[in-house]
Amino acid sequence: MSGGSFVVAIDGPAASGKGTLARGLAERFSLAHLDTGSLYRATAFLVLEAGGDPADAAAAERAARHVTPALLGDPRLRGEAVGAAASVVAAIAQVRRALLDFQRDFAAHPPAPPRGSRTRGPRTRGPRIRGAVLDGRDIGSVVCPQAQVKLFLTASLEARAARRLKELRERGEPAIYEAVLLDLKERDARDTLRHAAPLRAAPGAVTIDTTALDADRALESVSQLIARSLDAAR
Ligand code: DC
Image 1 (cartoon, protein in one colour):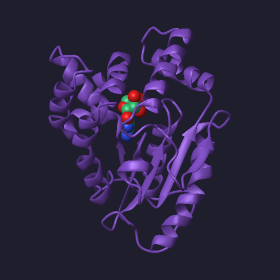
Image 2 (cartoon, protein in one colour):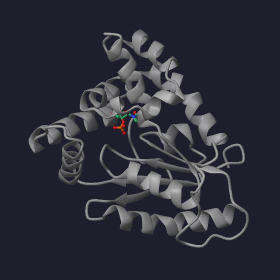
Image 3 (cartoon, rainbow, N blue to C red):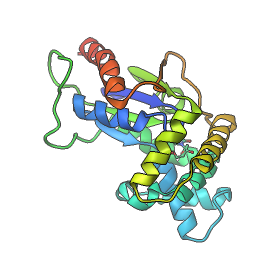
Image 4 (tube, rainbow, N blue to C red):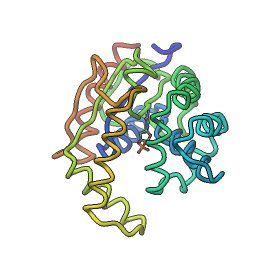
């Protein structure tokens, strides 16, 4: 285990359902959760706020070093412009290095989960285990290659575009399907083809295609796997 902690690594492209699954698993098994995309979004946000260029490696690295945990929950990180800039700063190796220790430290020393969250669903035996769910693009391959459970979520581009469109409209942002599809395609290309920690399934990862799977069914199917792994780790 990572410094005595139980780690679930979830990777996959944008809108593959990994965030929803990660939150659901964290709540169900009383694990801490880190959405690592928010670190890259926070970096991009700080660069944009300062009027900088997200492709400027020195400015982006400086911003990455100024990311604070308090900024990670800021709703301004969720906008599309910040998301697009995040995929630019995420391709810069110095930025990835600057954010690595925070992620590894979170995995090794996860904060206590919020009060009131407790284990539901599949029964697990024995004492409660300290652990964390991290979701992103390189968690199983680079950040936590020793994770007890590694998942790689995929879904068709069209299904992901439809989900993202729904999300944007629910937030009251005007969006059209074709533009969302094109944006996801560009983001996939940047995340997959970049030199630094490209998006790919880590060795040993279980791949789950969520194209025809709703969030509840994805959570149920993965919960069995986590429950078995938790029992084995005790
Ligand atoms: O999951 P998201 O859309 O919030 O991620 C924002 C960007 O950050 C995305 O383009 C990919 C990048 N990212 C990354 O490179 N590595 C991670 N572990 C998480 C996100």
